[in-house]
Image (cartoon, rainbow, N blue to C red):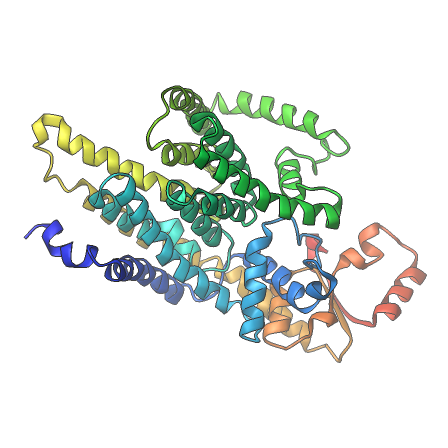
Amino acid sequence: MGVEKRLYSILTNPTYTFLLFFSIAIIPRILVWTLIPLDWNFDSYHHWQISYLTLKIGLRHGRLWDLNGCELYWGVVPHLVQAFLLGVFSTASITPYRVLNILLGGVNTYLIYLIGRDNFYWEIGLYAGVLFAFYPPAVIFDAIAMQETLALCLALLSVYTFRSRPGWSGLLLALAGQSRTEFWLVSIVFVMGVALVERLSMRAQSFIVSWLMTTGVFCTLFWNWTSNPVYPLYWSLFNVFGGWTEQGLGRPFLDLMTTWISKKVLAWSSKTTGQALLGSTAVFACTFFHMVRRRWERYHLVLFFLVVTVVFSPIFVPYYPDHTRSLLFMLRMSTPIAAFGSILLICLIYRAKLNLFGGRLRRLPVELALVMVAIASLGYLIPSYSLFQEDISLAFRAADRSFSHYQGGTIVCDNPTMNYRLASRWKIEAEDLLGNHYSPYYYGVSDPVRYVEWFKGNNVTLWIYTGSQS
């Protein structure tokens, strides 16, 4: 009995189909959580800090909140979602958001199947979904409390609904852009591509207007909060272009951008990984030109994949092979590429097996081989990520020892991981946590009288110094 006959009764029932892909995806993610029980990524705790303080302090002021001034630097949607979960479950634990990410990992796998099935063929969707279910970075990062899983879910939903419900597609893509700043950049390019390919058809108009209106709401909020309507995107690019470096301080944004581009093009042209990045950009430009000219039927899927590849690849590829630790942390940026790329990869394999050598390659199990490689790679990477738990454990131990000296009052600490421990384990209230952004120390003040006034005014009884973050 072939695969088609064995799966027919499942894949013809939408509920069974969802449960199949959902189960295939969440099993390895739960396994990773079991093997790596501690959320090992320090950024998870900073996102938690923003969500927790937003719930406890920020919402009553009509905005997000953070002790380190980063409440709007990343996407705001995941922070609001996590704040909602913390409020619903009346907890300070990071666990509810980790559970949500695992569940969304199953949803993402199912969406990949649907996109592959609806745009090509059910078997392409099947193998693409299974391949992504075991893609190592997706499995590992879906088990922690980061933003990428929710952002990818919204992006997949946008692509899935693009042809049938363009208005919803535009809204979902805008929300993806406010979940992960890179998707905001992706969405801008994608919206421009849709306008050029479809020549402002009714579908394109519905999609673009919806995206503009939703994005406009967030831009209005950013304008009211910061006087910069594209605050997260601006400062993310400012950071990428070296605006915080000694050489970049005080230079105009456009000057920073042109200098960065010229330096990167020069550096990448002499490195294998850089040549790959430049090559992918050239392929994107040529393909996009042909796409606009010929008005491809399924252009939206290919266009989205190409834009995602060009935007996300430079974030992690340059770390290979010399900076292994940084590469492991940044491999999460490969997940959107893998999600959309798995569909196109399986499609190419499927067509090659049908057309090459008179179809004699049809029974060659290339797709299963790729899945087995993904599973083997996952087993290889888990021990490497498990080692990162040590840093978090040390921060927890430092917080525990610090708390032993606490006798009430305000704690000043810039380390979100330690703040998480203080709030979740030792039940420190949000109002009793303060950051050095509010201290004379942060502004280079040396007058001891100013420190005494600040300590007294804020009832500071414990100041935790954590090195470069303080």
